[in-house]
Length: 106
Image 1 (cartoon, helix red, strand yellow):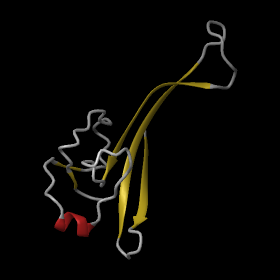
Image 2 (cartoon, one colour):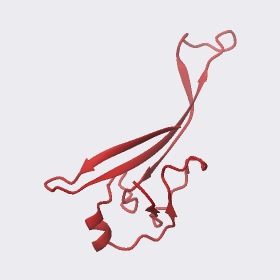
Image 3 (cartoon, one colour):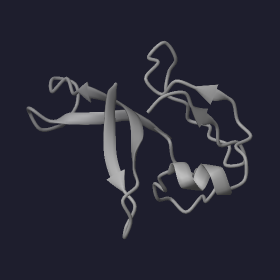
């Protein structure tokens, strides 16, 4: 599992925030005695990702960072609070765009 934290700033402003992305990439190494493949190459078996501190309600396929000013003026979040750094849970594949939760820390 890979976790990347991106520091971002609002265009034309001085407010900054962080966006946390968790990614899981499962790969296989082909048994060249059984399968036709290229030595030293990996096969992607599965992948999943989860983004925190973004406005997931937009559903436009882009990461839309949540800034403090947006949280004060926008509609309230309907999902539960969660810690994006908690590794005791797996990466969720089912994101409900109607339930954007709140991160407990960034």
